Image 1: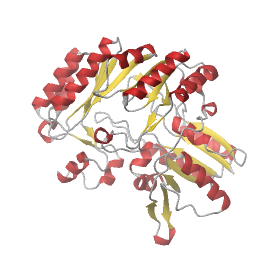
Image 2: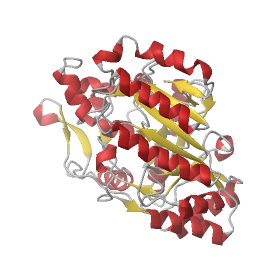
Image 3: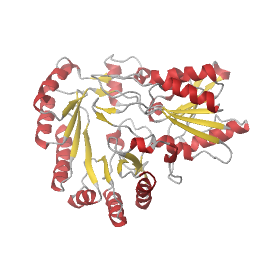
Image 4: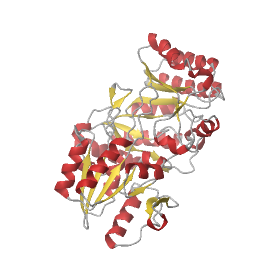
Amino acid sequence: MKILLIATNQADRFMDRMVVRPVPIGLAYLAASVDEERHTLRVLDLMFADDAVSQVADAVSEFEPDIIGLSIRNLDNQSSLNPMWNLPAVRDIIERIRQISAAKMLVGGPAFSILPSECLDYVGADLGIAGDAAEAFATLVERIDNGADYRDIPGIVYRDDANDGQIVVSEGRFTSNFHRSPRLDLLDMRAYNGSGFGVGVVTKLAQSYSPTPGANYSGDDWRIRDPQEVVDEIRALDDDFSINKVFFIDSGFNIPAEHAKATCRAIIDAGVRVRWNSYVRPSEDADAELMSLMKQSGCSLALMAEGGRGGEGLVDRLAGLERMADLCRGAGLPFTMNVTFGEPDETKASVERKLDFLKRVKSVFAVLRVGTRILPNTAVAQTALAEGQIASESELMQPTFYIEPQVRDWLADHLCEAATDYPRWNLM
């Protein structure tokens, strides 16, 4: 069979300013799962497309695929001040494909996995895969090729023809491993060189969608990559594409500390030339040795975020972040801060406490988020339902933000005014 994989993401700006073009690393892993001895594979990346719909139509007409997989990276840009919804563009692409091809279309990716039923219904694809897609996709392709039933594949999303086309999400999820290298050779990697925070390299993965990341960051579902594999991938990026700026895909690189230190030491010992960035989290295990190793191994920026329930535990949360900031500063490691305002139970006092914190820590730049992007199965979603801000979690497919009622009327203006004297503070 002929298989066409399409990376639909075209969002190339961070805070509407900095050029950030993330490599579709998930799609590259998906491509690596295809058995090319049995199937013909092609990848289309729309990041640099001037006219995405036309480019897809041309590729489909020329290649004549049997299966088309479309990855959806983000539902929206996470900005309450300038919301941009990504799914209509995907629906337009699928509608155009329908006009010229009978190929079976399936969708997946991080955004799709948040609300798989709603997303499948909206974009109009035939099938979807919720969760890590590589193993599920490989299994699905073989089932379709053999004319076999695929409805029992974990995470498969399909329309049940025997039940008036009702959308069904099968139980369970596949978990990807790192046994196959991502097929970066199928992408225009030169176009990505030097863009934003760097080319993504996975160091640790958790579940595909964690609705309460702070509470669930316990290690129960972590898949931690061997440090030598990370080194090998960094070296391959340099050897194959002359790329030495990477972003470690990890929502808390420093946890667990011993693995983070081992990864840093492996990079140092290998003598690979790299500049890397990643997210870090407050942790009691974080120490000066870790930050020094991060710096020595090529870390040039540590990204941190504050997000909780308004004033609940705020003092402790900010103290943890400030400790991390002090450790970074002691190692000469630049860091950023991402702070959310307007969460449930936010007050004027907690807003001012967060602003004072930002002034005190002096990060190289800061993101001030106005409101919380409401996601399904979260405490914020339950609050929004109880307050009547949303009628159903299905609405959360579109950009939807919660701002605590007692600060809602003045919060954005107040933050804008506060940022006047701080040019590296950016509101979203």
